[in-house]
Amino acid sequence: MKKLALACLLSVVVTFLPQSVSAVPTITLVSQPDTIDGLSSVFVDVVVSGLDTLLGAWELDLLYDPTVFVPQLVPPSGFGGLLGDVFAGEAVGGADVSVAGVISFLQVSLLSSGELDALQGNPPGSGNVLDELRLATIGLFRFDPSTGVPVSLLDSANVILSDDLGNRILPVANPTTGVFIGVPEPGSWALLVAGALLLGRRRLRHEQDRSETASRR
Image (cartoon, rainbow, N blue to C red):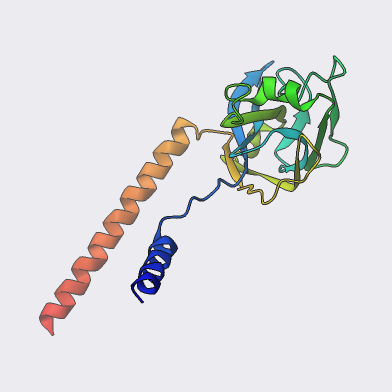
């Protein structure tokens, strides 16, 4: 009887012990504003984090607003190199920009698991993978700076990740990213501040009127 009670107690304790939660691989779009030849632009790094296995292949669609940006495959645009050098024949891949608003990436490594571990291991041979892998970088030029749009959204879709053995990695998170592409001119800031002050005064006056009316009642 005592053994049975002890077994039940142990099962309850194990049930309520904190369970280890494996990280979900996440695709992040990291943007860095820049200027090239006088044109406003951003370079966007496609980054994956939270992997617990080597990455052997990936593909995704990067979605952008074609009324704000046009993609430019100029340096430092290119693949990150952690699946091998495309130009050296260590990987195959490309970026298709033929559809407005969509950049379709695809890359497949031709390296062995050991060679991938040398690039992605943290440290190599430990069984751990780097916290973040930069998959690619793409340039987005703002072809019409007069649009006055301060923020534009980037998104990723149709994400497929595979490990070094060709097995698909699931699930994958891919949150939307806001890209700051412009700063209001000083005159615009002045108008914004003036408008905020005016609105505050109107609210204060409205509250005072309401208080006076209530006191009269």
